[in-house]
Length: 268
Image 1 (tube, rainbow, N blue to C red):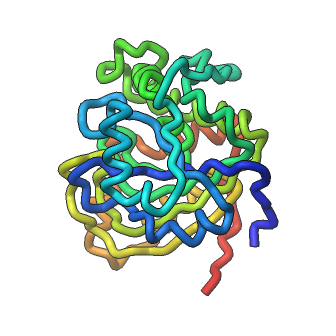
Image 2 (spheres, rainbow, N blue to C red):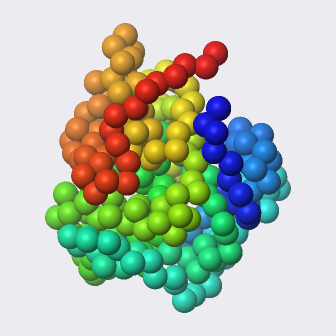
């Protein structure tokens, strides 16, 4: 339907889910689309404590959650050194640090669980491209708006701007050979990175597919807003608004690697 073929060796970016999280999208759900592109599941270590912040612990989590059972799995930053992707015209970043194994792939399928997020307001395609594809050190740099030491203390809007800046580097690396799938289900205000997460507050909405990360995130927000009869809508959007979450979409559109304008085609 998109008219876009992912060629060569395909990396499939997922969220492996923190140990204890009940909302992440399971590997059996994703299996048909991963099999269709003959892809390899890719992930990166986290910059915060938990069960995914070191290579041994993250590999164990990937196995516990079933990813290794269903698919070939590659922890991109399992070993250093990181690969450095140049940031074009960044306000805060000059380099985006990603796992060196990214060099082994020709195209990228971004599978996103659209949901809330404690810091970013929401998580979708742009978060997967930026924080999701960054190495553990790269995540700290993005959160710190260029300074890893400021990981939890940087100005919030500068962090959101840094996410938008870093996302472009991954698109550039794959020369635009990227497709995005966003699943609007298990709509919790918390991310799959939370070991203790709030249960979903809204009903499932559906699945979106696009070649534009900005458009698919904007469409996700718009589809949530459209659920005016869902009693959980105010709670979900309070999380997005209180973190200025849609600002990341605005900055990405201003940078110019996507547009907030889109045509929504419904497929039954």
